[in-house]
Amino acid sequence: MSVLRIGHRGSKGYVAENTLESINNAISLGVNGIEIDIFKCLSGELVLSHENNLKRLTGKSGQLEKLTLSDLKDFLVAGKYKIPTLNDVLIKIESPLFVNIELKGSDTAGATSKIVADFSRKTSWTLDHFIVSSSNWNELEKFRSIDNNTPVGVLVNKSISINEAIEFGKKINAQAIHPHYQLLDEITVKKIKNNGFKTYTWTVNNADDINFMKKIKVDGIISDYPDRI
Image 1 (tube, rainbow, N blue to C red):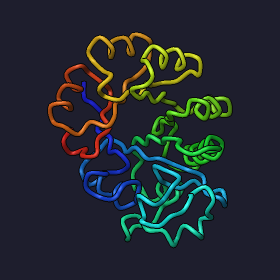
Image 2: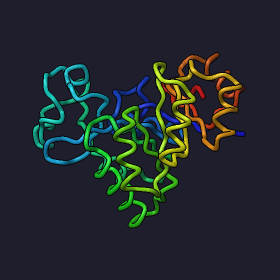
Image 3: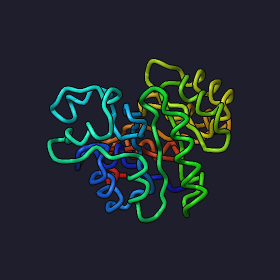
Image 4: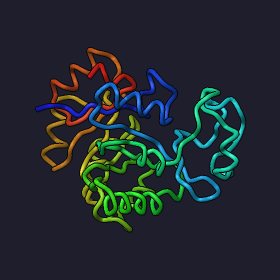
């Protein structure tokens, strides 16, 4: 079994996260897919960012959800990269690949569903090229309530049990569980699979940890350094 090589926020270990340049670099490294984070800005577009507060990423104070897309042109990630929209990112990826869209901000479910549906209907992308995940289970449940076709993944951090995630995954008809790698061992991965889910784990950067994830047969590894997988 081959594991999916998924670049975290593009290829965060090499190029500033959640930028088109980071995504392009990940693709050049031969990934099977990318993981990206999204918020909805004030003018309604979905844009890539791991957090609402833009200070860490751009050096400038600002709340993404209170800024328009036009406002965001004045905020450069690491001082040089534009904050891209989800739509622009998908348009500029030349060949469809696996894209894990993580819903970070509030009220992102509906707009995400619309973009995914539009791309799967009008382009060579299919719904199977996407998986929508979130640690905000309320937003994920909202997504599923309006979109029962796009694959979804239940994101699990160290404060939540795998059993809770499996139960919730069944409730919303999820396709995958996305646990932090330190939650996983061979028995846990088997439990996830026996309940009908794929296992996509994050954020695995150390070579020994990557090899262990392969050994216990996860389906996909999300890494800042996807070329290490």
